[in-house]
Structure formats: C-alpha cells, structure tokens
Length: 256
Length: 218
Image 1: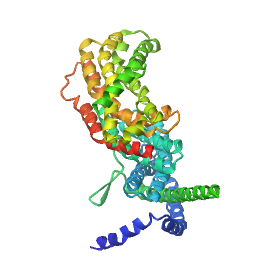
Image 2: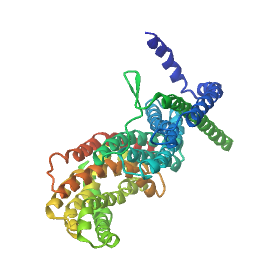
Image 3: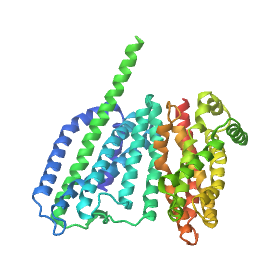
Image 4: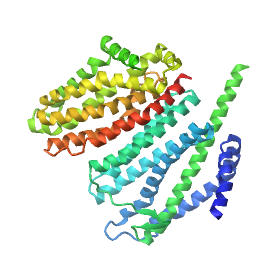
C-alpha cells in the first residue's frame, strides 16, 4: 500500500522533470549531494575491496579486478536501458529532456563497456591464459559496444536537433531489439568460458555465487558506480540542455 | 505499390545500378579469398559456407545506400510521401525491389560460386535455401539503415556502421545452418530462426523506417 502511495507522488513529479526548467532546478539541487555520495560509496567500496579483503585462494590478488569489472558491466547494460527508455519517452511524449538524457547516457555506457572489456581482458590473461575468447558474454559485450558506437555516430552526423533526436531514438529502439536477439543468437553460436552471473536478484533476495567477504565491498562499489553513472548522466544532460539554449539564443541573435 | 516495385527494379537493371554490381562484387570476393588463404581445397571447403554468407551480406550492404539516396536527392521521395501510399508501403516496396535485384540473384549464384570454393552441390542447395530466406532480412535492415542516413552527406560509411551490428543475428543463424549442413547434419528446423528474423523484420521495421522517413522529410 505504501509503495503505491509513493508511486502516486513519484510519477507526477517524474513527468514534471521533463520541463527543462524544473529539471535544471532539481538536478542542480541534487547534484552536489549525489556527487558526495558517489565519492563516498565508490571510495569506500574500492579501497575496501582493493586493500582490506584477502586474496583469493586460487586467483591471488587478480580477483580484485572484480570491483571494477562487475560494476562497469552492470552500468554498461543499464546505460543502454536508460538510452532506450529516454528514446521511447521522446517518441511518445516529445519532451526534449528525455532524449537529451538518452544522448548523455550513450557515451557513459560506451565507456563502461570499454572498461568492462579491458578489465576482463587483463583478468583473463593470467586466469584463462588469454586476453580474448569468443565466448557468448564477451562477444555480446563487444556487440553492445558496436551498438553504442552506431548511436553516438548518428548523433554526431546530423545537425538538425529534432530530426537527429527522432532518428537516434528509432535506432535505439530497433537496436535494442537486435541487441537482445544477438545476445541469444551468440549463445547458440558458441559455448562459453565465462563464469555464471556473480550477483542475481531473485524474488527480492539477492543470491550470490561469491563469499560475503568479497560481496560487501562489491555491492558498495556497484552502488558507487550506479551513483557515478547518475552523476555523469545529470552533468551530461545539463550540458546538453545548456547547449540547446545557447543554440536558440544564437539563432535569436542572428535574426536581429 | 507494385508500380513502385517494378519502377525500382527496372531502374536498377537499366541504369547500371545495384543489379550486376552486387553480383560482381560477390564474385570478386570469392576469387580474392583463395589468394589470401592459399589454394588448399580442404581449407577452402571448411570456410566456404561462412565466407559465402559474409560475401552475400557485404554485397547487400554495398548497394543499400542507393535504395533511398537518389530518390531523396531528386525529390521523388517527397512526392511519394504526399501520395496516398503510406510510407510504410513505400519502404516495403523499395526493400522488396532491393531484394529482387540483389538478394535473389546472390542466393541463386551462391551455390555456383561455392563450387569455386570446393563446396559440394548438396551443401550448396542448403546455402541457396538459407540465403533465400535470410537475404530479405538483410535487404529490410539495409533499407532501414538507409532511411536513417538519408540526410547525411556521404553517409555510406555511417550506414555500414549502423547496419552491420544489426546484421549479426542473421549472419550467425545463416552461417550456422550451412556449416551444420557441411558437416553432414540434418536440417531439422535450423532454417526456422532465419525465417523468424525475416518475418520479424517485415513485421516491425516498416513502422520504424516510416518514422525515420517522416523525420527526414519534415
């Protein structure tokens, strides 16, 4: 009951954020706090993970790369999700803030994909004996990276803001369908070497295939990465909104 | 819609457009491959199914920026947009014409080119079948990409950047089928995913492409 009541207040507020003015005010108010929280969570999580946990019995200290690898992979996928949602909201409701959030999400997600792939490769060399294998998970991450590149490249190619917003949104939606399709096609194509999911949430209870000594700092750095994503997303979206305002002002100036 | 289809087919056959070009590109790729990998018959037979699928895919991609490009530049597309024909149908007719002039001849020629790569005719038949079912999806996806990059000057490179990731599932299932056939396995149902992708593309891409066309023609 209480969650329902919460939702009743949340959605009207959420849609109000689509007004650039409201968005700028609220994001400006929240941003310092979110930045502080990010630094706190990420700093504690990483320091705890890197220096205050024991080495793994078989993997030695290479295991510690997990504190970067898992959270960045987590954000890489959810960044695409945010991009698709923002695009969908733009196509349905025509509110600029949502498409600009989608636009801001893409480079962050793309960077996270690179981080996940690189840390994975660095970890894979001593443990699997190779930097790269064509394992389904690795392959689908590389494909995800290609989809991010396509989306960012299309934004860069066209000047007309409304037009490019429409086109990239269409691309993001179709891309999502094909990205999911590729994910499952790749499983058919090759059996994997990558281990199962580290953290899964089933029935509201997190099930973990990892000892809690490693899990607690991991959870903290995942939250930290989530907050980092939010921070960068807000900064990115604010920059885009300001850039658009600037463009409008310049246009007005030229008319005079 | 049928008129638009025939017009596009006739145009591409007569004006030295995609028709022969894609086929010749495919042939050249097949000829170059033994030079790169050596003339060993067993190696060639091993890579032939995947290579022929990849070649067909690239040949399809190569001609897909012409699907809408010329009509956009000379204003035909705007006339089509104001005609009673919905843009979804315009897209479908154009994609069908593209398939008819590239996908279909490529599929039929692939077993013949397969002989050059030491692929036996039985597997060639499977290859032909899988291409016949899969190339419509390639044409549809290519046309979709073409609607996205209409307004971009020299959008060819961008087009391939956008379209190639979308080709991945079709390529995986296509090459998987032919590779399995080359190893002497039964077909039982491995053509179904390819057909599913094609039918899915027919079902959803017209609407998204029409959206993209509308955004471009505003």
